[in-house]
Image (tube, rainbow, N blue to C red; front, side):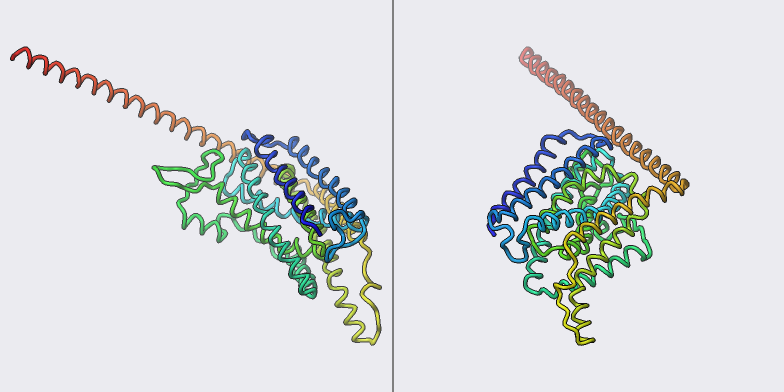
Length: 402
């Protein structure tokens, strides 16, 4: 396979990111639900259109697509695998959104500055995901049996994340947060959208930088289950990478749509459980066939019991649909939970307003300090002028006396 598809795809991604930050969102502002919905629609639409590119490329083997190791040869299978990987990553990213909301709330980051943090967070996630996918593809290519390990890992993650005890740890108490606040000069004050702030001539890190690093670390942890999950669908590195990246690109806008209501989707975790367990079964199925053959002396082949490609996409879409619809129905039957969520949103809004007011007061205080310094300088200048005149007068008197 040629490197051209990789280069073209990466150029497209970075061009879109540059357009996003450098042109469309250059001015700092709060991203409201309406704007976020438009961007979410844009990213999803773009991802769907790219599926057509996948189909044409693999169907016609453009630049060697479909002929490389681990690839499927036909365009129809390729587009099904791409969409399946994309929707799996989208479903798993809902956990990321909940964690991001907790991080911003803990560090009291106003809504208008969250976009900048998420932009650089997404950029870092693209790089880390690319590295992890590359390593995963190399390992799978060399040691195919590692897929069994991935399957077992997904079973453990699915059970633990769904039925395990939920511990909502304050992001400020995470080891990475404590490390940064202890070993670097840290100021809890947020000075605009800056990651660094100079105080008395010394450089300090702000809560925005700590949030960024915590988000990056959290994404790497989440990738531990999302990347094995997509390798359970296909081992084609190009499909794994492109579907993963497109899902991450739309994560920022999806955050602004769902951050305030993510707690209402109580049943999504069960949908994710079904998806992860399904992928785990797919990965472990060959091992099970070998076990049956060994135990009963049969001669089943792996291909004979292999699940059709379309079944993966069907399970993912049906699970997500039931998770969303079921959550809405459950939420309507438990109005007290909505009241609690509304109260939390109100408290969050009040907190953001207080932070912004404090920021404005700090800015006004700095302005007053600057004016006071200017006034002091003016007074000093006048005093110096008076002193100069006094000296000139003395010199003049001395000459007259002579």
